[in-house]
Image 1: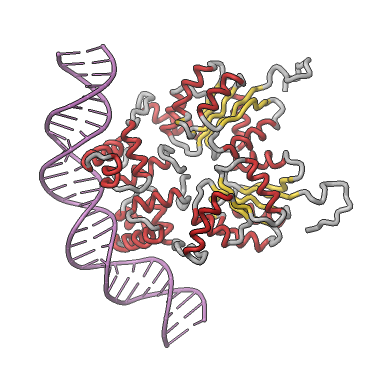
Image 2: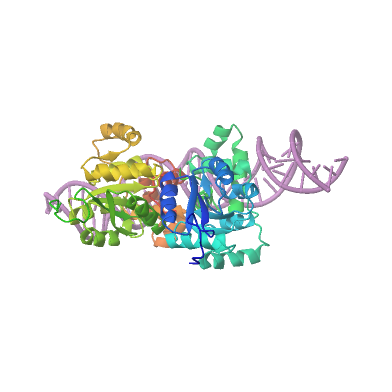
Length: 224
Length: 224
DNA sequence: TGGCGCCTGGTACGGCTGCACTAGACGAGT
DNA sequence: ACTCGTCTAGTGCAGCCGTACCAGGCGCCA
């Protein structure tokens, strides 16, 4: 690399990395892998948004690798907040499910990059370096999928579900029927049916089953 | 094992580990993490059953960390075969979804252990060491869940889906209706209905939705 | 204060699904 | 040859679901 270091500490171009993933196994492994790169320094790792918040301030990272599903909330939803804590830090979203919707949401929220967990470790390493230098990190494959969508609708993913709809989608994902959900929420079956119809429309689905299918694929509901 | 080494290479109690996971990112990271343990030697990593097959013979591992979902088949289903290639190797199954059914199936197939990806990296490291010494690696939490099931039914998970049922479950997971599936497979809707009824019964579900829900939870159908 | 979005509840109807039960064809194992 | 499991196909019916459309209450915001 540059090699212009005169100190015996960390060279000035060392990238400070923070790794946040709900699976400690993955976070720790990835941290170890990144650590073995001479120009990267893993300054912290966490498994939740609250930990990320704390580490964001205390470890002063240059790049944050942020999983989108975290126990205490949505990683993408926390981007703006984390960005506020340390504006100079570049946030790269890591996701298990590759979803156009998620990608758009992440980029809109101010993410510097978006890497699917189906990509290679080298992609992460390169991505961290690129993000540190202010580049956007999105694979060409994802970009080609993203462009037509951005063109089609001015960049907004207006298919955002309301809190109630999310709640019902979650119950759907547990295999509950409309009647079950109605009982569970102590509301009418008609109301449930309306919510299901609305969220199905938002997801572009034509049935509960398809809605659930899409929700699973896009990471809206939990495997855990 | 070879054992009687007089070389000054790796100490005789070094555990040779093979890591197999469809996500190269995870496999490589985990390999890196294990590598940093002085008593562990990662001799190979792969992302598919076919790679595992080849590496099993060429790298002579003591312990194999095997993901259950792989692009060319079911990891648990491949345990017996891999075991046949190198009987002395201990196979530890790694899964994203913690399912009783899967756990039972893995242990029955001859797995030496079962570790959920929700566990910590240290659990994997300890698990590898334990497996290498012939111990069974199953977390206490999982064991307590497993015991009543083993007692209830003589150890058999008779809820194994047929190939056709799997196929239909997979189409269900894509949000297709019975009619869609019938058309897709060029069979009658009645047949589809029967298959759905049968696989639902096997899964203990009372509706397609619940069946899909269970299937997702147990990792029977793909997020990818 | 009016508009807007969300949650709620309702009606009506066609269609699909769940369930139970039957039954022929075909391959594998004994 | 026989049995067994699987895939296939069918019937009949009760019940749930999808869709469309309406409407009141509530909180938020200009």
